[in-house]
Image (cartoon, rainbow, N blue to C red; front, side, top):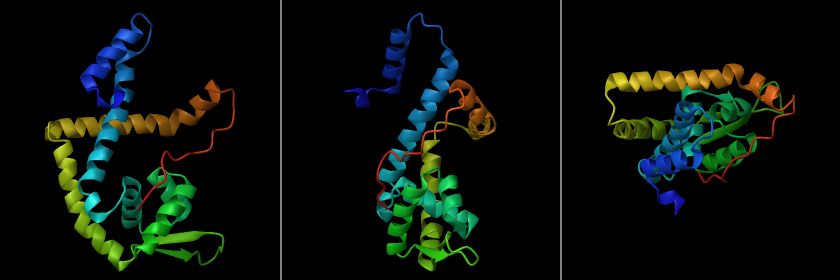
Length: 190
């Protein structure tokens, strides 16, 4: 079953399949391992520290964004969290129902909604984030401090490349076609 293959097995199978095809193997490995690492980390954190607070990854990220940025328009929260506005609507309503987030109308534009943490949401993040960070340390446990800094900077450069040049590249590859609408992979449960 593909979901049960180790990273070493997956790399071996890909190398066999790609054989003589001229590709950028090192760059392929970077992108594939970014995806694998993100999936493994997300699953680990959801099944460990977030489970105790009955939060999904998406719900935690929304709480994090609002905690760090303070009261924010929903469109900005969705963008920072990397989710669609529709996904944010469902997540924020669930978090609001749990008493963790407050949704208020914008004071000068009735079409906009502002999100802020309630006192209970603030207390949860103050209690939960140190536990979350302990798991971040566990996840990066095979790396030394310098390796962590180097990897973090390398990943930051990947993000900057896409942020600064991704739209231009997309337009060139797709002859200026409009971007596909953002989709969320799963329906979130907060």
